[in-house]
Length: 285
Image (cartoon, rainbow, N blue to C red; front, top):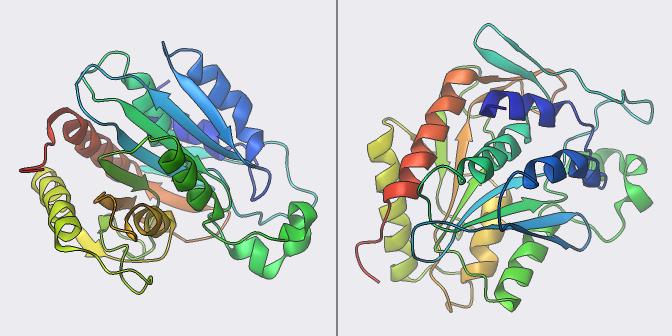
């Protein structure tokens, strides 16, 4: 199954916020194809997948969120519409794109020379149903907030000394307004109650410059999503200096049932991450 088929398979599953476990059967079938892999479920619907690598060094984390927005109400279809047409993937692409790409690299690790990978799959990234239609969530979403999954995952990783050198969060961006493009979000400390030390800023710059060298131009932008949560809870106490970057292909329309993502943007991102995993090294400790 190639990356586009993976994305379409993910997009067809109604894994709405608080019902992310509907994706588990697909993920379990794919995990079974990878040797020496370890999967941990983090309360409630988060997954951390540890993938051994063949390159020495700390793991690199690839992250995506599991939940989708429920646009259908209580009478939703058992299988959502997702298809390829005119150079696009069409359907609920947020964040089927990110999850499909993460699963693609989990499988690809079996035949490529990569460092160890941490696949971070979070619950409750989306705010739309929690804000506008809490009756569609389990227990009306009481006690939840957008990004709680990424926070729970980061707490687990720190407690168990599973510290990545870099977090690449793959999501989608509306900033191109219907045109093709790829955005990089790279300032998780922006307006988020922590100050970045110079070492974190420099290491983040190294990651961004490497990615820009692989694909130019990239739109350097910012928005609030899980990448900021990882950046905040890994780095706010200055114990670690872990660049947390979002890599996001253009999507249009946004937060709608018929979202479209350009196939060529997905393919470019896959190439960028492949080269990053094989070649990136920090200039200094």
